[in-house]
Length: 374
Image: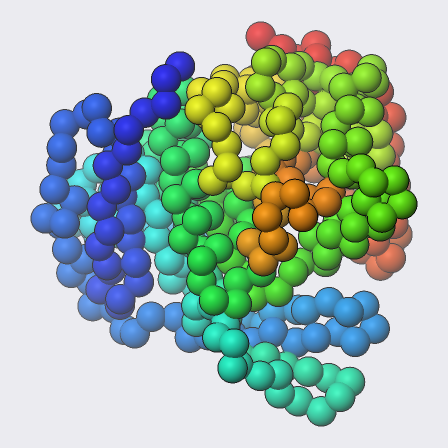
C-alpha cells in the first residue's frame, strides 16, 4: 500500500506537557487546537533521578511520582479516551486518530541532559538528577480495539508517529537511546486498557543495548562483518522462520528466552525508523499485523492478547549507520504465556541472575507460530 501523507498538530496540555495529533492528510481537516485542555492541573512532572550500580555498571531510575499513576481505571474514566462534555481526559479533542503526549507520571523527565550536566555523589555511588523523556502513544480513540484489530492505514499512521518522535527525541541533547514499545494485556502488567504504547528517551544506554553495542563491536573487530547482518542471515537459513515477504522477515531466535518469542527484521538493515525507505514502510503494516495476530491466535480466540512488543533502534550518538555494528532496527515480540492456563514467571535464575531457562524449544515455538497464520 502507498505511504500516506500525515497532518501533524502540536499543542499543549494544561500543565505545559506537549500533545501531538497525527491525522491522515487524506481525511477531512480538523482543527485540533480548537479543543484546549481546561483541567485544573498543577505544574508538569518533576524530574526523577538516575542512580548508578557500580557492580553491574548499569543505571537505575528512581521516580516516586509513578506511585500516583492511574491503576485500572474503568472505561468511563479512561484517561486515554477522547474528552466529552462531562469528562476531561489527556486528549481534549472529542475524537482523534493517533495522539502522542508527554507522560503525566514519567519514569524519565526533564528533557535531554546538557553537556555541562554533571554526576553527583560519592564514589562508588553516583547520582544524576533528571534527564530523559517519556511519551504515551495512543493508537486509536476506540477504547475496545487492540493493535492487531487496526487496519493497515492506521498502522502506517502509527509508523509515521514513531518515526517523527524518534527523530525529535534523538535530537535532544544527552539522549542516548530512543525505545518504542507496547505492553498489551493484564498479565503483562498493563494498568490502562486503552490501546496504547510508549516511547522512552533514555539519558543513558539501557543494559541490553549496552551489551548489543559491545558485542557488535567485538564481532566487527574479529570478523570484519556486521553482527546484525550475520544474525539475520543465519536465522533466514534456519527452520525457525515464521513468515517473510520482500521487505520483512519474522523468526523465532536461536536462543529465545521466552516460551513464545519472535523477532521482526527489515530484510535490509537500517538504524532506526527514520531510515526506512518507501518500500519497507509500505510493506510494514501487513507484516507487523500478521505477527501480532499470530500471537493472538496462538492460544485460541477466547484469551485476550498478552505480549510485549519492543522496538530496538541504534543509539542516536553511535555515529553513521556504517559505524553501528550489530545495532539496527527490529522488533522483539514475546508473550508471558507458555500455555493457555500457564504463565512464564521470572523465578530465581531469571530475576536473581538474569539467566533465562526456556521450557519450549525455539523450533517448536516457530512451528506453532507458523500454524497460527490466517
